[in-house]
Image (tube, rainbow, N blue to C red):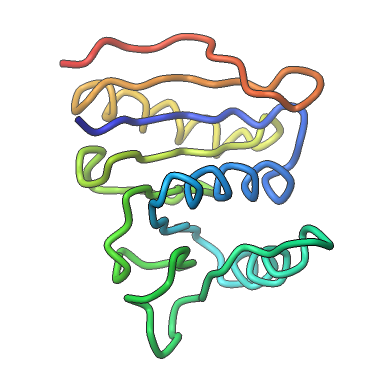
Length: 153
């Protein structure tokens, strides 16, 4: 069954929280698409994913690469999912038509971005109607705490 997970960034910015979630995704043997709304943001994430830790990196490619179907993590501003992802990450108020198309759809939004928070509320309503949703919030140390969930339809 598909899951919709909402991650409210209150203690860490996206570029610190996203790599950990992507690592967990890959550890499960899953593939991911990170869908954003800004090519500039994806360019910055692209660089960060190669360098975010001294001892490791997260293998990935951006929209326009030669072999998107082979990428464990694919960054895009479009609707394409060429690597057959298990997990769809929606950042910066990116949207998805369906919250049931992947094993998980993860919506990440920053506490200080009022537009993204408002958009996440609308997405929560749609996700709750389609598959149910779980809301996670960061504690002061950046660890995720489950705050509540909506029942599956």
